[in-house]
Image (cartoon, rainbow, N blue to C red):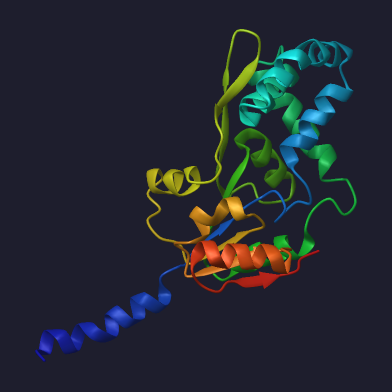
Length: 233
């Protein structure tokens, strides 16, 4: 072994130890109990008679589409719930909703937030990778004191009648978005869903949150290895 190799070995080891880990968190079902965007959409319909009426008028179309594509059927109702909102007004209503949401008792997963903050304290790079919409989840995290956290989420775009779905960040799109953001590897990934198998598989440690033994077995089969299962409240 050359002198140069001997000298560089401790430096490489030190760099490996000191390098921050990348840790991924899903949002819905992991940091919050339930689906945040669903709660927002329900709020939108509850506060507007016109949106309720528009949803009733859209039901025949939704019923027609549902057997062929539940995604398109659901997206139609989302567009109804966002009628009349431009980028500025959408930001305003989501910010107000986020402020009210964090005041609800037992709405958020205390254990999950504690683990996330522990990773931050240890110097890890933490990224929330979620199917929830970006502006909404960012406002919620800000209300929780996590305004500086990295977020990769679903996106909306402005349309003639209101905000519309641009990209739904689920399944295989999550690792694709990570790659586009320059994240090539991650060490730990937390999720509550089998749908996140593409994000969990590359992780050195995959963690299933509040999953049943049956779901755990399905996920282990999909990943081809054992995983960690945790119960968070």
